[in-house]
Length: 85
Image (cartoon, rainbow, N blue to C red; front, side, top):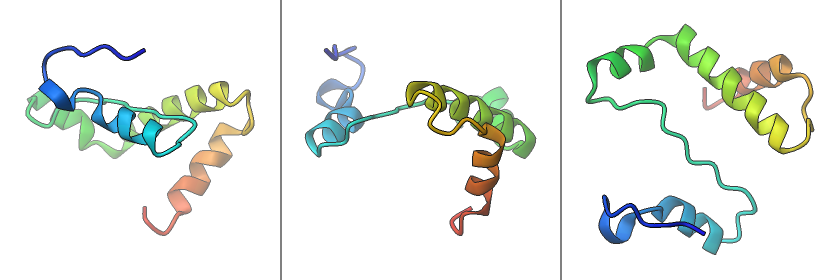
């Protein structure tokens, strides 16, 4: 059960709540830093660091789906080949 933190008022967990209400079986909400924090901003603008972050996310997601994609490196390559990248 989701609990409100009180920070965002009625909008706490809105992304998760709306995804669940729409029937999405899995919802991942990840914060990797804040653009208003200079150190985070520098990290988020470094492509090599973002690739490492993506690999970490991919490993976690593969673990959740019981290694449906055992080759994380191959999955990352496919993501970078996607037309929206």
